[in-house]
Image (tube, rainbow, N blue to C red; front, side, top):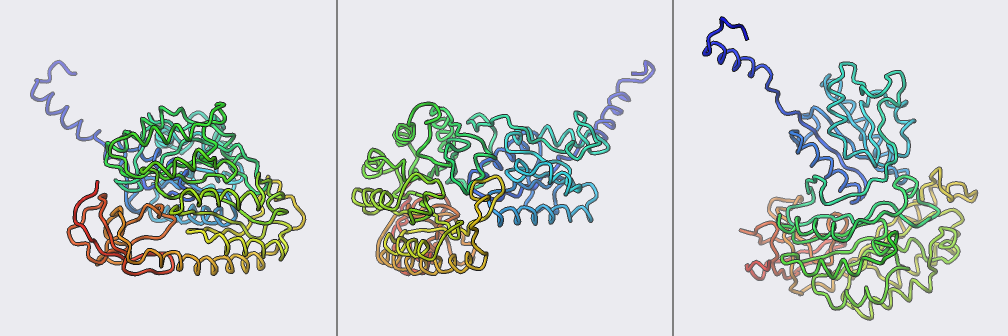
Length: 484
């Protein structure tokens, strides 16, 4: 400071200088594509940025940075990811200072190709590096030419952070729950120990890596303290949780979670049928906090196709497992996923799948057309099925499932059941919406409530089902008493 400057003058100058250097917080808009496991990664990125002083925006047009968390599992998911990236980069035409960052499975899988083919993207971050997103974006702003100071600007790969460091989610990572204030996903493991012939996930996400059980418990307790009533446990195969550590940890985890005060529903997603033990079935029958719902991906019913897929079960074993489950827990809702058009799938194979679905009458079902993916065993098979046949078979399965779903939901008519109130319906502001314990968030149907005056989101209410549709229910509140 100049010695001739008086203190008041100095203070005034300091204040003026402070006004010059104060920066408006930068704003980010994150678009999350793909599965619930990917969504948790997105929530960690949002938590990291918000913890670093960033703001989150509702629309990409408001943002300084648009982040696209991609899916690279099958062809349609890759197309959606590329289209979304291109839409984001298009905004640069009207916002010259906009940065576009691409993360997730597509980056991890195609880092070199993306970096060369999409020069308008400022940064690519893989599935093991995204927790450092705040640091990487700050480095982007620190460099006038938009290149990271640690990397050479001469190569397109200078914009890529996609090395494999065997990331494992932890309860001490910052995270912003985006599902709802009353529900959340909890990821208990990364990677996968299976080697399904059609799947690229192990190559992208690595081998199975399970979190310590105490880390999961701490996270769930934190979420419950924030008002979460429903926990949706996720992993590539939930029943394999702990096996990389030489233990079967799902059962002890569920028992410990059931002891947490305030937690009302524990939902199990993605349990491979070969790992559905009698002990787990017994817990479904006896533990009231365990939602009567399970997601069991069967993929197919033809023994020859299941063998070609490198699945660890056959049709007889699938029938036996499902029969054991339903005999002990008759009220359980079962969700599954199946694939049509796998290489070598004959008309007879497909007919077996149709018959199996018609016989089992799953409560919820997702169907996918096989996608030929490089780097997979099935991708190298010669007897690929044409796209028209795949689409025809997919539509036939969906039509069958619509009929099954409508009949299953009709059985709910007149029942009075606890319903988790989510809020005003997205279909109409004259309706409220909620979910039964037999309806998972995002993937299943809803209960629409037409007398929801003075309801509070995130509360449990008894609802009487008055109407049924193909996938959704309509009900009325029969008790204004909060069941929480």
